Image 1 (cartoon, helix red, strand yellow):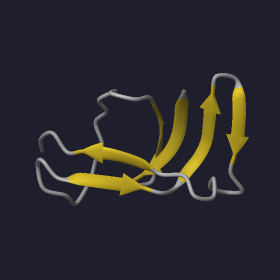
Image 2: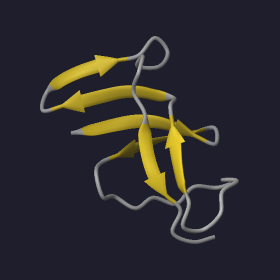
Image 3: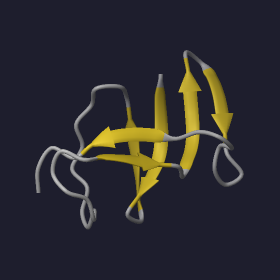
Image 4: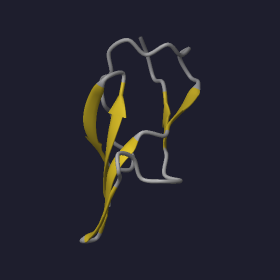
Length: 66
């Protein structure tokens, strides 16, 4: 399973337990953040494309460092 999510004006392909580097994120180290602008979800070949975002979908992440 993976998702395409828009974060800080950029699109990222993300999967569970993946680490990514994001510019201009206003959050403290150790805090959790939710990203609700999920553009696409692929769940084992079943693709859900948003118009523009997938309704009810979100990606939750933890800020590791700045």
